[in-house]
Image (cartoon, rainbow, N blue to C red):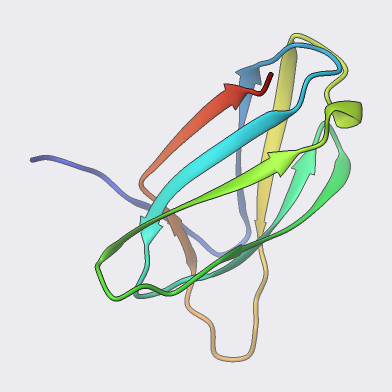
Amino acid sequence: MKDGARTFTISEEFVTKAQPNRRLIVAKRYDAAVAGAVRVIVDGKDAGVWELPQREFFFGESTFAIPAELITSNATRLRFVHIDRSGSLPANSYYYWVMVDG
């Protein structure tokens, strides 16, 4: 198996397809030994904090629901801002999945 990870101390972002006024579910695979949290920004608007729990195994997967009212176009920019807590390591991601809900 081959996989690749990205670590970041500030933020990472991408544009994804979406449907206006329909909730998006974002799933993420990450290094669960590091865990942590990121602030989710959707097209420049704050969608909340995504807590990434620590797990017993190396890989963790977690989901975050983006409210439908924040999805205003067919192309949505998602930004994940590292929340630097005292002594925290850089945030990381291995893979994202994005699904339109409903």
